[in-house]
Length: 182
Picture 1: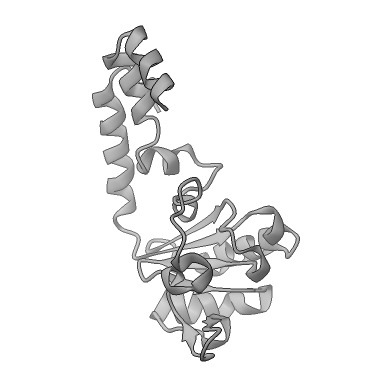
Picture 2: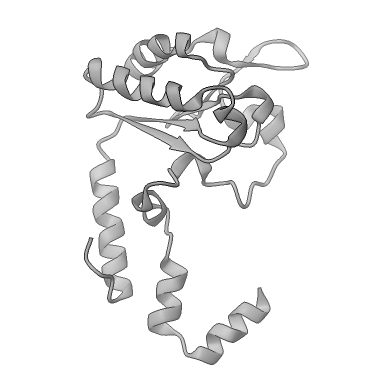
């Protein structure tokens, strides 16, 4: 990556990242938070990456290990986009089914879906899981999209645009006023 010398360069780099990513048909985001670490999320992540590769899905499926998804009691958690599928308490034993059935064929695995506490029916989407449904997630709203070890993920989501604006478009007093407002 070249040194960013203007807002236009940052936007150009961001667009380049997004162009490369548009070819992914699905993205699986595996929680890498502390609670999920205690439940072997690193081994699950490596197993998913390996299975995706072995099944010839690398061109169409992106595998991410992200920050905490917040619902530690249900970890390890996987969220699959673009559908928003929410799988709870996944294990190494589930990897083959997740890769072959869900990532490969778009099928749901009922046993991994969160059961509705009122009627027991499986909830397929993360946004409908009661734990998340009434939340307005601010700090963790981008977790499933950003691998904290990949700066490109942050830039792809608009990261550093405010810094770029401050460095190249604002005067020092404007920056101070902005910080005071915040």
